[in-house]
Image (tube, rainbow, N blue to C red; front, side, top):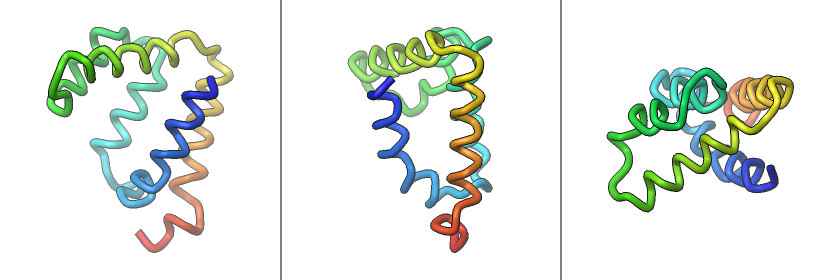
Length: 93
């Protein structure tokens, strides 16, 4: 779980840059959080952004980490993303 938090914190500048108007980013985040999306479905979704087998494996492990979380935790991740999009730091974007 600490790794997930670290990944989210690293992604904050990217999220702020994209803002909530980036539908591609929002869709990928939504599919990451969605427990109904399997690892293979998720890997297919992000396939255009994956260049090698190592990255594909890492993406699968990250998705599996989200699948191992409770629905409450996944809902809290969505709350976090909304807070980031609506923060004063992202307002200029």
